Image (cartoon, rainbow, N blue to C red; front, top):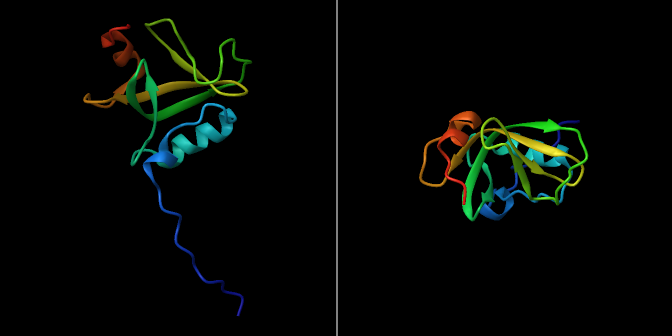
Length: 111
């Protein structure tokens, strides 16, 4: 009998959905992919909770600290991980609907 007993997946708690930007961009990318669309990985942008659904890895050395972001406020929003950037492509700001990054940046009021 080589069949092994099936085990349940570990429970997902809110704390395990928050992105730790000090991890490698591959780990962060896989966390976001694994939690999308529900319950969704999240982080904070200027104090507001942001659920992140779709991202892309950018393999360049970050010029800002892990967890900081860079944006041109029109076309891109990159968060720095420990070894590169995560480009946000689809997200949802608390109290708003899910949207593509270009639509989000067009309507977002920066502090």
